[in-house]
Structure formats: C-alpha cells, structure tokens
Amino acid sequence: MNPSARHDAQPAAQTTDWQAVAEQIKTWGKALGFQDVGITDTELDSHEVRLLNWLEQGFHGEMGYMERHGTRRSRPQELIPGTIRIISARMDYWPSDATPVEALLEQPETACISRYALGRDYHKVLRRRLQRLADRITDSVGSFGYRAFVDSAPVLEKALAEKAGLGWIGKHSNLLNDKAGGWFFLGELYTDLPLPVDSPATNHCGSCRRCIDICPTDAIVAPYQVDARRCISYLTIELHGSIPEPLRPKIGNRIYGCDDCQAVCPWNKFANASAEPDFAPRHGLDAPDLVSLFRWDEATFQKRTEGSAIRRIGHLRWLRNIAVALGNAPTSGPILDALRSRLNHPSELVREHVNWALRQHADKAAGST
Image 1 (cartoon, rainbow, N blue to C red):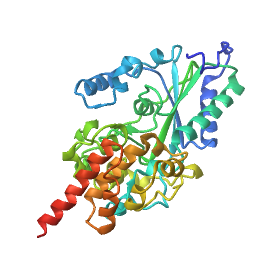
Image 2 (spheres, rainbow, N blue to C red; image 1 turned 120 degrees about the horizontal axis):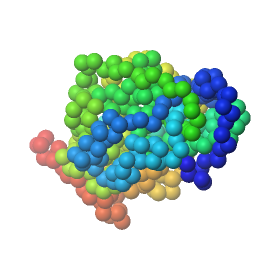
Image 3 (cartoon, helix red, strand yellow; image 1 turned 180 degrees about the vertical axis):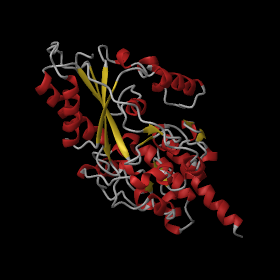
Image 4 (cartoon, rainbow, N blue to C red; image 1 turned 60 degrees about the vertical axis):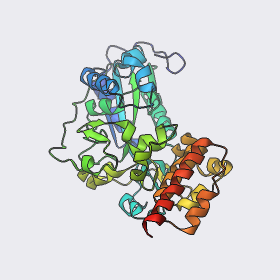
C-alpha cells in the first residue's frame, strides 16, 4: 500500500473473529451516515474484460486516464499492493426538496444541474466518513493497511459495489439498489484485512429499457454500454474543448451533468431522501436562471461554487455550457443581450459557443418569417 496514505500494520492476532469484525464495520458505517456497507475480494476479471473492450472502442473519449492506468483499475492489488479485501459503502444524496428534473427540463430558460452536484462536494464528505470508519477499525483490531477512495483514483467502484452486494450495475451503467434506487454515492476502503466477503447483488433490470430510450443523445449504445463521447455528463464536465455541434441542440438546458436516465428509472421510486445536511442544495443552484448564471464573472463563479463539485470545470467551461443552453432556449431580449455581452470574451472556446448560440436564434427568427 502507498506508504504516504496507509497505516502500516502489525499482523492481527490469529484469534481475531473476522466475521464479528465485519459485522461491526457495517454497524459503524451506518452510524457514520452510510446507508449500506459491503465487503468483497479483489477478483474483477469479467469487469476487466468489459473495461478493455470499452476502451478499445474509444468510448472513453478524452478521458485518457481511463487508459493510462492500465490494469491497476481492475486489479486492486496492483494499485495498492497488499490489498485483499475492499469495504464498499454507499450514501444517499437525493435532495427530495429540490425541483424535480422533469420540471426543470420543461423550463428552457432555467438551468438544469445534475442533482448530485447541488450540495457540498461528495468527495470530501465521503472521504472524511471513510477515514472515521478506518479509525474505528484501527481501534478494534489494531493498525492495519488501508487506503480510502472516493471517485479519485483508478478504481472500478461500481463493479466492487456490485460484488459487495450493494446493488447491480443497470443498463445505464449506474449502480441500482432494489430498496434505494440509484441516487447515491460510493466510496471504498482498500484493506489488507482477511474479512469474510458478501454475496454479489443480482440484476433486476429485466426487459426494461427506459434509460436507453430517454437518453437525449443516444449515448447508451447498448444495454450496459455507454459511449461517453455522446453522454451529456461527459460533454459538460469531462470534455475540455468544443462540444460537437450536432450534439448541442440535444443538451437542452442541462449545464452540468444529466440525470435523465436516473429520473426515468422505475427503481428510483424506492429512492430515499438524503439525511445528510451537506447534500442539501446550496448557493441557489437548484433552479437558477440561465441569464443570471451567464453573467457571473470568474470571481463570482469561484465564490458561488465554493465547496461544490461544479468548481472543477472552471469558469470557461461553465460559460461554454451555458452558452449552449442559451442557444437552445426560446429567443428573448435578455438572452440575446447576455450572449452578445460575451462576443468579445478572451477565450476562443467561449466565443465560438456564443456565436453558435446567436446563430441558433438568428435561424429561429428566419424560420418564423
């Protein structure tokens, strides 16, 4: 394990009741705010085959890190030597008091932001809880080797969670739980503890294909297979350059991520409202006006996204995304004025998307005469 991140261990006593320890870990995890905790081994052979096929088809787009880490993503013991068990945990984030996604998509002058990004950055929230869980384990069994991850390293978190019994990977490639839907975050503790493992979850998607049919950009190219290059979450978050023009009209008013496949999934009728205060909507970003957001300068962007996962895209991509949404909105004086105010923006990326948006409104005007 990484010496800078692990706590070097002394071998635990041979008499340790690891089954009892595993049960304690699950109890502690729930007390710390996780809704579910499971344990799995490191064998991910079938998932590795799927990952390599996905990469071979180029479905990862500009996410070069998916390829760069090689098999360390699918072989935990290569990423963190000494790993033999992984503790997988999930935490609900669904903000029940936020505006429903379906309602936002019917308001084209309002920004639609993925519900997971409305609250505090989940990386920080979950990592702190995982550290506290590791501390409790240390108090119980003594020093041991571990490393905590929250969507921050080459980890197949959904595959591990499926093996740990927390849910199954749905046709949209997200994890689903038959008692909680899919509005939750995942985190992991890689450990060198010989804990008993849980049974993997079974798939319950059946013949349903609602997520496939609803995808605005047809990014779910086959059940359980997503072409990230077409996915709105990728286009608005991961992609650094220009959004392909044919896909821009399909983005609608989604300026950060996309929840369509989640919103339509029948299993989300069982979703539980998050009890975590940090995941409540912040900074007025639940249903904000597109024009107002587009007028933010960089200082305002930094201030209004403090502590949020949104900050990672930076101000330029924020403006790029909103320009596309404004181009898709109904023509109005305030929208045209907002777009024109950025025509001379220093960034070519912003200018190009602003010009595209203005052309959309010009085309609408020409078509109505």
